[in-house]
Image (cartoon, rainbow, N blue to C red; front, side, top):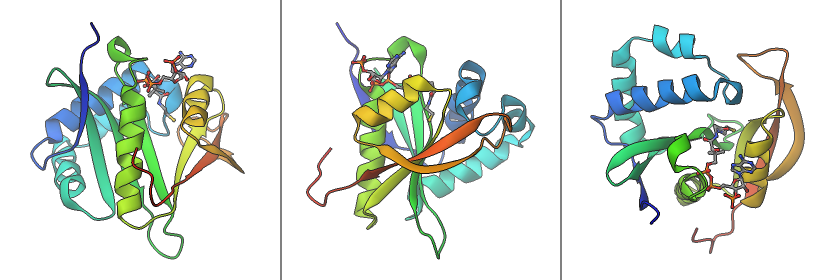
Length: 174
Ligand SMILES: CC(C)(COP(=O)(O)OP(=O)(O)OC[C@H]1O[C@@H](n2cnc3c(N)ncnc32)[C@H](O)[C@@H]1OP(=O)(O)O)[C@@H](O)C(=O)NCCC(=O)NCCS
């Protein structure tokens, strides 16, 4: 039987859970992210407490955590850029290998996108490494399409990432 997967917004006191999930994701899928494991390990652990506290209640920044049977097993960040652009993004998406292909990634991105739409945005963006064909297929299946924008990956300058966008519909429920 498939484990049941749920998503909820991070709580202010979950800094250590955030640090665990983020370092696990950078260790397991270093090709996917603009930050390296070394970067994350150098950061003072208390800054994860600050991030959790901010992401638990800010109207512009949030983190959503995936749980299986009560255990944290994935995450995604959602944020809205400062003016003048004010574009909305999902980032840092990761699902633990043991629970992949069970729609946990889809649940995370949909909950984060819905939250962004509730903050008033009409489009949700994601930077995706061009090497990460799994993520490209995953996002395309959720209705994201390429904008044509590309840039070098912050942590691996020799690789490029592409900007994808999904248009949210006001009535969109998931
Ligand atoms: C991308 C990721 C979040 C998907 O998580 P998930 O919980 O497995 O996703 P879902 O079950 O909701 O959707 C899976 C769908 O994504 C695509 N997909 C996921 N893994 C895939 C793979 N190895 N090969 C091809 N397609 C894949 C398929 O469309 C798949 O549908 P299927 O399971 O019916 O075949 C997960 O693979 C992951 O954490 N990867 C490493 C980190 C990463 O790449 N993050 C994205 C950064 S932009």
